[in-house]
Image (cartoon, rainbow, N blue to C red; front, top):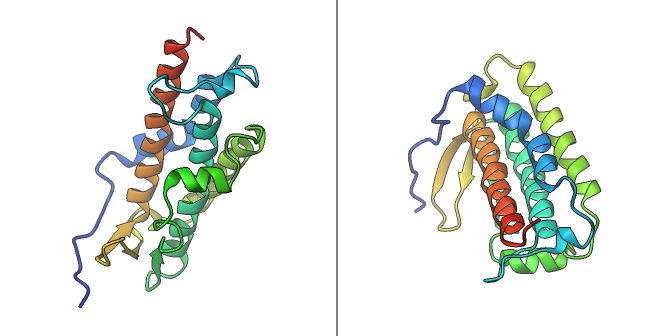
Length: 174
């Protein structure tokens, strides 16, 4: 038997979260502004992803979670899961999706397009923020996640990684 956990809803103010979500792409572009192609390959000295890899990770994460938002807006009886994604380590996805070798421009474009697309959809549905879908976690537990929760999570995800990028730049004096 699969257990059900409580609903996941946004914890912050909707207007503030939407503004942060909308601003994420430009904040990311500002964080990498002025970096050369080799500068994008700077990584933490203690190991971890390069700036280039982080940019691709952010865009891909947004693209994946976009499906959850669209599912909740279209069919609240649906179940969103990442069973195809979770068994494989993040580093393997980064390798499989060539994060270290690709230019970042297409991922920046994807992030902007995804955010604009979702914001346009949300503006058309008065009930969008509270709509939800069942989400199957890796342990099999099912949680209802609201659109607001996913938007807040993705807004925070960008800013978490922007801080990592800024730390890498500072470490390398860039």
